[in-house]
Length: 225
Image 1 (tube, rainbow, N blue to C red):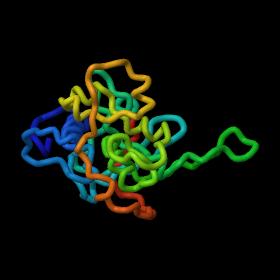
Image 2 (spheres, helix red, strand yellow; image 1 turned 60 degrees about the horizontal axis):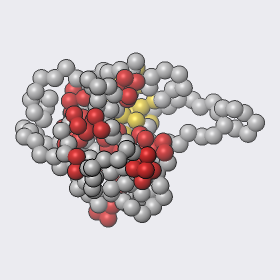
Image 3 (cartoon, rainbow, N blue to C red; image 1 turned 120 degrees about the horizontal axis):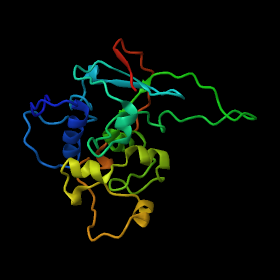
């Protein structure tokens, strides 16, 4: 690990814990700190061109990823996306459906034929920051109260599990704030959540930037099982 110099078998899962602690301002002793803006899920750094990551989602089968990060680690996407008791970290590159919506079927047809292409991906743990800066018309629980509610699919893509936060040793008072609908369906508990100070407020973030077409990278191209 470039941040703590530990030797780990799964850098994606290990780095995910560093990133969660940084996002929640949970202190830890590191040789180098996690990048402040959209950190790479493999190396934890921000702003490096080689860490750009792209994803191609297909109808049947796992997605493909492209990146040049030197810490690129091949992993089983479906397993990592779901998480497990032994490996709860679900920080995987995902396609933001606000940026790249799935089109409805054509009139008179049950489905729409779409040619899969690579698009810019967002690491799951970076989705809150991405929505705050790029989709300012939406509210984000714990960060921005005004705006339209996030579509269920988008919220689910950024929701953290209790096990993820427990394993990363995040204090409960810094856990992700739930949506009101989630709170209503959650079992009663003596603990209370409050807003996390991890990210900047919406007012300090840049306005929504227009997306530009990105040329395909000449990079490692991995089909994940």
